[in-house]
Structure formats: structure tokens, C-alpha cells
Length: 148
Image 1 (cartoon, rainbow, N blue to C red):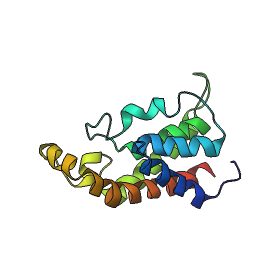
Image 2: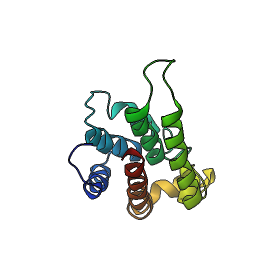
Image 3: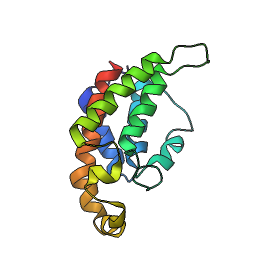
Image 4: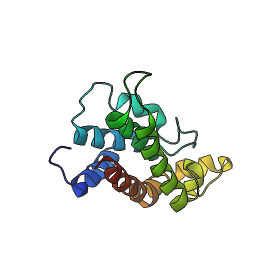
């Protein structure tokens, strides 16, 4: 990996999120830079995954970004290539995530239900600062470990 430390990568995630990238875009951007992957499709490919897939509050965007970053490094290029390395690493992050947060779904991690969407919108800045940024940092640390 490039000459960037774990701490620098985690902080880069925070900076991108504070710059108003989504949680998914944030993680994918920071780790694509770390891996030396330059492409005009990053962060575009991650955009609809923010907010739990286009703000539907399904799988957490930070977790989706981590899975995409694993694919950047360990994904396969042909159907004959082995997909096990990426699947195992993604599975470990999903397991850690669900163990710590109780779910992989954004809305459940936030502590809300689908009936609370207006409440989420009203409290967006508080949620981003107090739930999302610490969560993104945790996902970035787990992802760093998987990419070493």
C-alpha cells in the first residue's frame, strides 16, 4: 500500500465525510487512494450507496464502501479467478460490523425505524457528527487490517 499510515487514512475518511461526501464515497475514496487506484468512476460508483442505498437505510454506506475497497484489491477479473479472498475479507468486516452495531442496516445502526425518516432529516448534522463519523473511523480501521 502507498506510504500512508492507518491514522492518516482514517483521518482522510473523516475529512471526506466532513466535505459532504457520503459515507460510502468517503471510505471508497480514501482507500482507493491508499491502494493507488485512480479512476474517474471513484467516487461515482459509490454515490447511490450513501444513506443505506440511496437513503433507503439499508446496508450502511460505510460498510458498502469497505466491501467495494476490498474488491479493488482482491476482486477478480475473470469468472475463472478465485473470488474467495475478497469474499472472506468482506465477510469478516460484515461480521465485525454486525457484532458491534447489531445490524448492517443503516437505519437500525442509527437507532431509528422507517417511520422516523423525518426525524433523521431534522437531526442529520447531529447524526453525522455523533454516529456516522465514529462509525466510519471504525470501519476504516477494520478495512485497513483486511488490506494489510
